[in-house]
Image (cartoon, rainbow, N blue to C red; front, side):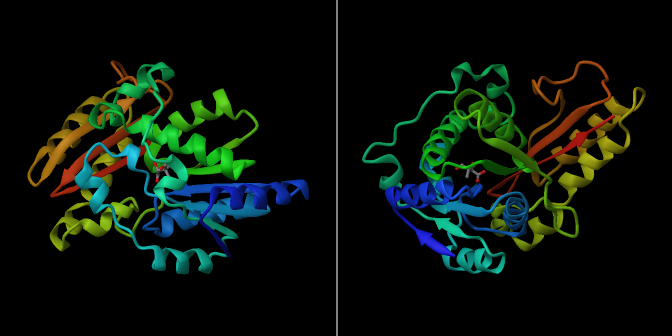
Length: 280
Ligand code: PAF
């Protein structure tokens, strides 16, 4: 695996690979890698000739400085994991390499109403930062295909829109959520859970499943109410559990066969999200 820290070096390396007709797969991350990230790298390896993973803790997508500062940084371990799955290139730039001296971000105001819902409401400005950094990274990595995890479903919709608008030649791949044996969605933030919080955390997925298993005209709403009640009990600090349209993310007013159930809760100082897509 080649480790590259400078944008110019990566751009010229990728340009040569593209000139040799090699297909570039890209997995952008903020590090603290786990098996979920590795499943994205594996998907990229299956579909492309060369896989680039970026590790960059993007300051513009955090709304709270404390969250940015406490974001886990485990670069040595990350490198070992990337070597274990034969990733080809690791791009690990400094903040100034990507942003220069000022942390300016673009606006996603015109992306549509879905941008303001759910994560957009809980974390104002978050998607502005995500789009800003991905536009910069896509221009350096020049990927043919990109790979994102379904856990950040709303982010996937945002990235899809960025691609449609500005990088139509790039193929977007939505990859399934990797889960621990007890169902907890893998996340870099899980390491922050205390032992007792870690035991409770699978309840998020259990309650999403409760809704998914009762997804029919007569019981979907009572299952939703039950799941909300379960997750609103201490020590969960409930943010949302919503049944939404898969494209608009509008909350469903009446039953429809396909939907997505999304949840966000806080457990102690850790914010966890998860979802289940319901197909007819
Ligand atoms: O999902 C993430 O880890 C980040 O939002 C991303 C896509 C790497 C952008 O910083």
